[in-house]
Image (tube, rainbow, N blue to C red):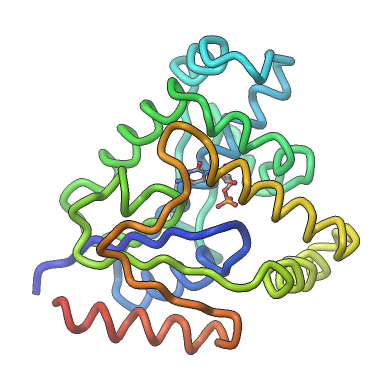
Length: 222
Ligand code: C5P
């Protein structure tokens, strides 16, 4: 059967990447974490001391940047101008700034183009905020994944514990809610469920249950 494109969108820390990785592996598809791409350009903008509010400055910077995603055992490695930044892009410092960078039109135009090239003609599971609405509008399966903000903060807290990051739960919840607000209210390609996306509330689901639900929906489309 012909491979399909699967778009997974939703708010921060809803479990998109964890579940998308499992689904991609089961299907033998490639997994593309578009959030990692926005995080990578944010890291560079911070390192270079750019004016983060400037669409032009950040857009120019991105033109002269190479962001590369490579599959690895644990999902995906992220390279920024040949340097491995897989860990660095997860820092609070980047997390707090990324939504401002991702709101710029010049950034979104280039990223969407790059993401469409990466997905072209292959079986792909892509996660982000605007995949079903802008990047892969013809995807055969679109999922809008969410969970309560309390549950999302709790999951991020547990995930952080394993990586020795000890941001308090209340701070995580605040940061997540703030990022959702910025991502939903921005002018260009805001976070939104595509009309033809299937809503998947993962609040009461385990990772395995959520992955299975998506695999079932995929099987119906193959
Ligand atoms: O998915 P993740 O939480 O790593 O995404 C980080 C940020 O990147 C989001 O909060 C959002 O501002 C931005 N993003 C986006 N469009 C995407 C993926 C991520 O604007 N497709």
